[in-house]
Amino acid sequence: MKTISQKQSQKLVAIVFTASLAICSSGVFAGGSHDHKHAVEYDPVQNGFGMYKAGMHVTKVIEIEMSDAMTFSPSEITVNKGDVIKFVHRNVGQMMHEFVLGTPESLNEHAEMMKKFPGMEHKEPYMVHVAPGKKGEITWMFSVAGEFSFGCLIPGHYDAGMKGIVRVGS
Image 1: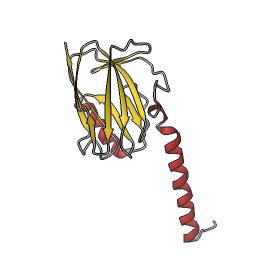
Image 2: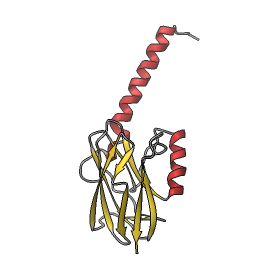
Image 3: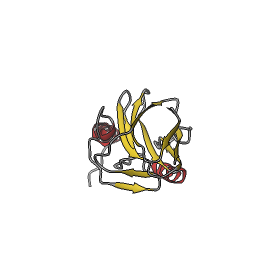
Image 4: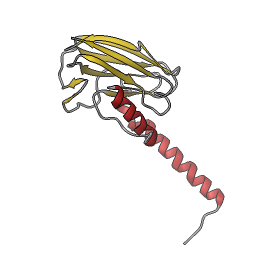
């Protein structure tokens, strides 16, 4: 078995780190850094806070800014049951941010999972990653009345207060 010197070991670590960074920035978040449509069509989804299916007719567009101050603007949204919302997310910061719809429980659970697996990919129609200076969007139907949540579940962001509320009237 051949051993390597400390200098060779440091060089290898630097190469692996650089390659990992290039891979992460080139493809992992590609679905949310575009300007117009989903890069991927999703399978239909229905859950406790709404639904998605391809070809839904958008009834309302809501623009949301994401910032490095760990805020969404607006952070409170009111819609009606049955509304099909196109959320257009604009990342005005220098860090990657994401927008994930859910219940407070599902977001808390997912935020804890993200702490354990920070490079986790998102492939659901109610989630989008947005690179700095880019836009991303999702389309979602709120088929259930109630109060739901959204947040940026990148480790540290949610805990810093990057979250909001969607109130769905009947």
